[in-house]
Image 1 (cartoon, helix red, strand yellow):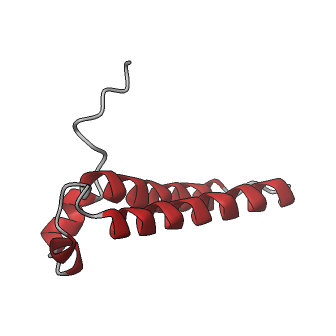
Image 2 (spheres, rainbow, N blue to C red):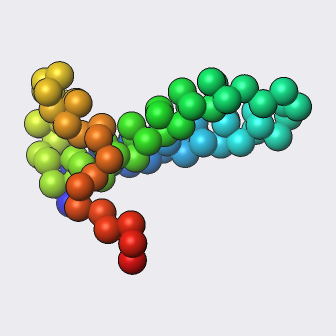
Length: 83
């Protein structure tokens, strides 16, 4: 794992967002699907980036391009969800 610092940062951000979303859902009787959708996108961005940058050098993730960002935030192609 070349990029432990950034991976941990993304996983911590995903966890914080997930914890916040769970707390909001538990407290709020009026479920806001639009807000839920946006929150889930944000969580997936962090999880996908944590996975997709695992082999990147820290220098690369510090000086990324918009193309890098868009590539890293996509759902991983190397996950087999059928196992």
